[in-house]
Image 1: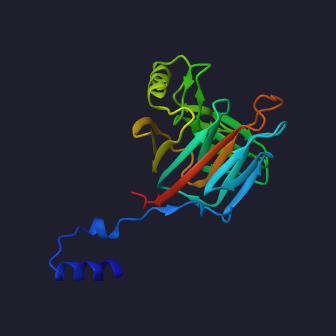
Image 2: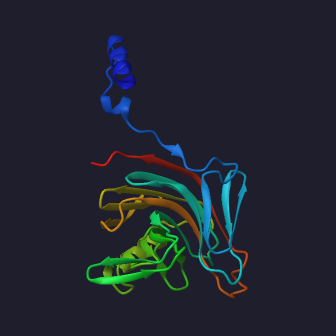
Length: 241
């Protein structure tokens, strides 16, 4: 009703404005920049802190993957954020992800996956700047706790080679990188620093929480204390088409 009244008012003033411009959903901050209100930690015992409006994840020894998860769930959306990561660390951002108090099973294409209680699982937009292994798959899509890599598929595939070649060109080592994610229906697309990276069709999960991952480093003392940072997390919720 308010949109209609605003539109009539603008027409009365002689302005040429489309309904889409008036009624388009607005991006909102996913993180308030001060504390973790609306978020909950799941999985391991890595540390999360707020510094200068940024979320800082720090690895600790001998713990499993750790996730800072939104309490709210999201279906169709556009998500944008910036991250900066230590080159020794793998990380990622979960989307449409789930976590259950009881063990569950997931069936897909004739295969059954057992998911233990408390296990965060679902799509992950990777932060994977592995120059040493020549696997620059940042903004690829990995399914945490279930099927593994969805895009690219297979380390020796042409898709994977192209992903790495592109990553070497566009990834900013030691600096802030920008990611855009569009999840609409069964389509998930990602952009890294303005370049389209993943274009996946998958209908396994339509809704879930968003989470920031600090990957396990096991007993590797050279990686203990490494950090990943996020800032400018914004989400635009969309009406399903």
